[in-house]
Length: 202
Image (cartoon, rainbow, N blue to C red):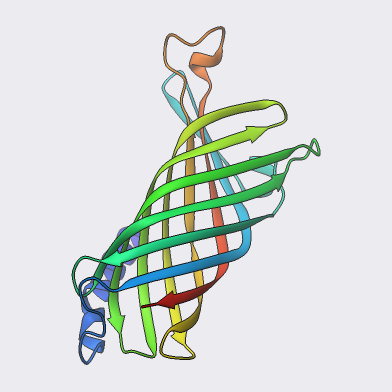
């Protein structure tokens, strides 16, 4: 019950945020380039076996250590508070076996600007696409989603710095046609990136 109440309160806060903007700063057709760098924290890993979901939390659950993350993104405003674009990133995490897990997400990006004052923006991002995962000598494609919140302060008219925090998830899916026991080993991993963003808007 408490979780549902917090979720409802969060939705109400987000819906009310535009009231804090005196006016729209952006125009349709404005663009923004973002350079992102920081760390990603293992959040949890889930397994689906025999139609049962099991979750393993944190570093011990994901068997990976805190890693690094960097990305580049571009977006263009389609309305005065909504922008669309794309993002390509790169993340790496060492496993307990001292092997490197690399993640290269390539996603479409939707950004909503509920607060925009010219000097300060609050941005909500939603990304969806695919990622190239590599662990040891294994490489495969997986669906990828990312949700984040990004407060930004503009030092000049064009350049701003911000803090971006959220969650991303990769899903490793095996169908019934997969060989051996793979068909019962579908899994997803969730990480929590915490990054600095440098934004150039035009």
